[in-house]
Length: 88
Image 1 (cartoon, rainbow, N blue to C red):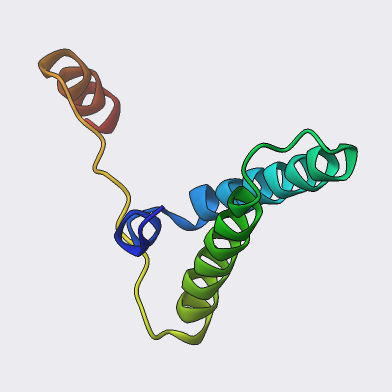
Image 2: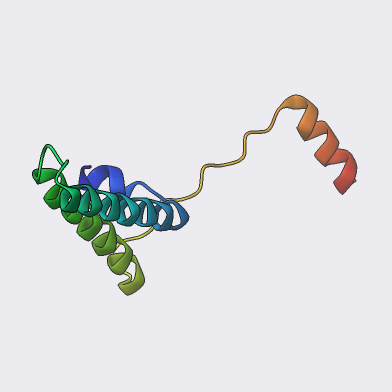
């Protein structure tokens, strides 16, 4: 996973990604302990990805980097008409 991909995620998505990576690391360690892990580098790659996610989270906490803006809600003609009626 590239740092550009991680930086483009929202805070909520980063938290979810971190949880999934930690789960993946646990499974990789378990598989390694049983002796059935084919590629040992997967553990190192997973650890690096966890570090990248934690780095982006920390940078945002310190205000070094801004979180990406949430995508604007798409409005259709129908929903715009309903919104106008509710406001009016």
